[in-house]
Image 1 (spheres, rainbow, N blue to C red):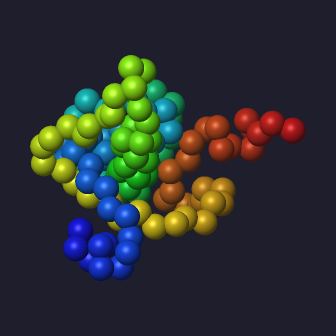
Image 2 (spheres, rainbow, N blue to C red):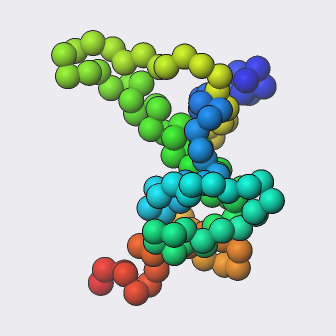
Length: 120
């Protein structure tokens, strides 16, 4: 956290109990149990193949962006939104170059990025 501040970067803490590695980053289906020995897995709901660490990174990033959106939006009655307390994991936010996801060997593949679902 102090390194992000020193570098002038944003820093978001995500709840450490957020199930980032066992939630499908494509369809958000949560796997029931997944021992740490399983490094790659296929989603039961959509069939997407995931590397455990890459999938967790995608989910932590998405959760941090969701937290930013919630934290900067007023509630319906005009009040401010406060974050929940508790132990947190963290993510360093840096500008990202937007590009199509890699569909190479060992990467996650979401069906809506597949050419057969492309809109022409």
